[in-house]
Image 1 (cartoon, rainbow, N blue to C red):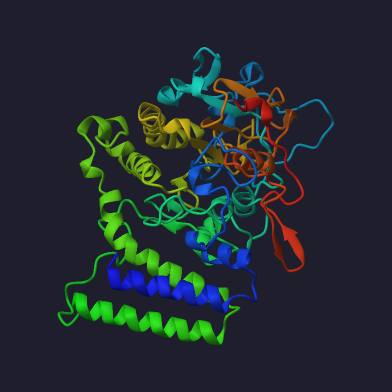
Image 2 (cartoon, rainbow, N blue to C red):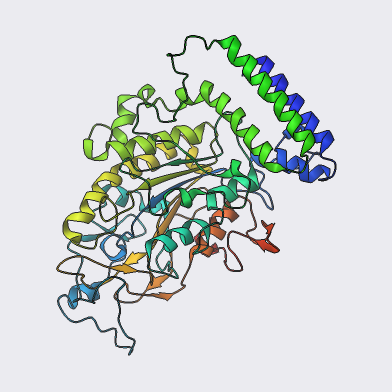
Amino acid sequence: MNPNLQNESLGRREFLWRAGNGFGALALAQLLGAEDAVPPRARTELNCGLHHPAKARRVIQLFMNGGASQMDLFDYKPELFKRHGQKFDPGIGERVEAATSAPGMVMKPPFEFKQHGHCGRWVSSLFPHIAGRVDDMAFLMALASKTNVHGPASYMMNTGFLAPGHPCLGAWVSYGLGRLTDNLPTFVVLPDARGLPYNQKGNFTAGFLPITHQGTAINAHLPAPIANLAPSGTPKFITHESEQDGLALLARLNRRHAAMHPAHGQLESRIESYELAARLQMHAPETLDIAKESAVTQKLYGLDDKVTEDFGRRCLMARRLAERGVRFIQIWSGAGGPKNNWDNHSDIHNELPAMTRATDKPIAGLLADLKARGLLEDTLVVWSTEFGRMPFTQGATGRDHNGGTSVAWLAGAGIKGGTTFGESDPWSWKAAEDKTYCYDLHATILHLLGIDHEKLAVRHNGIDRRLTDVHGEVVRSILA
């Protein structure tokens, strides 16, 4: 950063510290995120955790947008093979319904299943590369949702609530633990090249938290992944000197506005955004330049194959972001809408393989690369989706939405690899044993980051809001 700009920044923070005594010293320190303003305490950026010692410093979340079919990927059910083509009757007298269609006949997975690893985890032939990493993973096999509608279910899995307006997991992590580096965003989102997911940017919102905690979207497939990062060469009158003069003027105006409105946190968020943008101009180009990776590494992620290139690029970029200090990275597979995602209503036989082929090798490559570099020791990797799919057909060979059960897995920091928690019924229709919800998954993730999910709360509209609302238990049986 330019020395003059840095001096302006320090002056602004010193001014706000002195002007903000009405907030209380600790409250203002939290608002500003200024390390030099915080009294001596355990520094969360050094992995001490907020409430207890942390096992993980950072999280990479892989979100399969659309509802990945659990019984065709990880949840092997012999009953589906036995009753293929029969009317679905769970035998409990409960009415069988589907979200967008009339229930069809029982449909077996059209893909072969085999057991893998020392743990004997059943995995579909659609995931040959991921199957080789199952001894590093812990599976939640009965992860339910309270809805089978994409929008609310995506909000629930990302924010803990069915309705919009609440901070997502990445925003809560950013708010609770702060940054690991000053040069890159704390929370980065890598959307699918084909488009944003259901809810658009609502899935990675800061909600009622300061806007600085929302996800920074990076479009990895574009020549300029971050818009306007480099100045345009068209206006010749813009020089380095004129830009510094403009920044200095902006700093003076900000200080004046802060003096008039000392209780307004929006200005601080805006200033931090400008400061981060300035630092990004210096550090982001190198971070996002995957061309510097060896040909062997690029091949590990599938960058040599058109099918896996997009998702592989984002997985490799995620590793580079993680090792440079980004605390929470979310990678999306699938756009919103009726196709190009995991929402396989029409034809599981052809639609699901297209999604698994694009993601299988890159995900396995990410896990292998993190482990080889020692990063998996303090990086938590999470694979999840918004809900599962039905054991019976929709139309000829599709599957409808199913909030009754789905699968998620975790790997890396603090995870006991090769373990399983929960079980669905014989048809993978509903959770049967040790049912979990997003609250339990979120509580477990926060726990590994050194956060007690019951203590991380913000007073909002008269309510002490938390990511897990009034629910959630840490799934301790999958922890190392």
